[in-house]
Image 1 (spheres, rainbow, N blue to C red):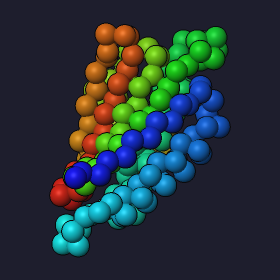
Image 2 (cartoon, one colour):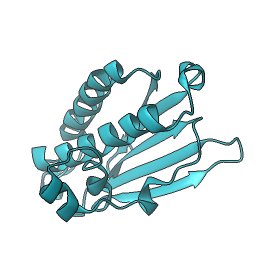
Image 3 (cartoon, rainbow, N blue to C red):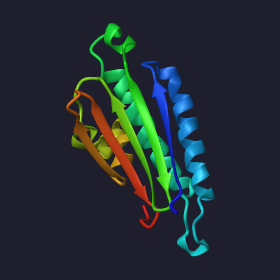
Length: 155
């Protein structure tokens, strides 16, 4: 029998909700340590791995809120969801929104620029480069970003 869990958070177009998103993801990731796995599997994620995932999700959701809608009226109708799934082999996140089409995986951050200029915006997208990510624009005209982390891989 495979144990699995799925939780979906609905997010408005308000940046103030990011704190709750981070807390929700952290609690979800903390719970990965309680999945019924064999002791030798080394299941669960350490705090560094958790923080990479939290940073990537935080940045992706912030970018959707800040840049995904053309005006305040469109932002007020934002439909953003974060679905979190876990089982004995992996943890997986799906961020879905009804904003303008944007593939964050095609826009890699330039780390030297950030260090030279002292910029902070966009640095979270760097975390996507070390995670198993995929993007698609659905037939329903929504952005869908999937982030997956297998327990067996070290990052």
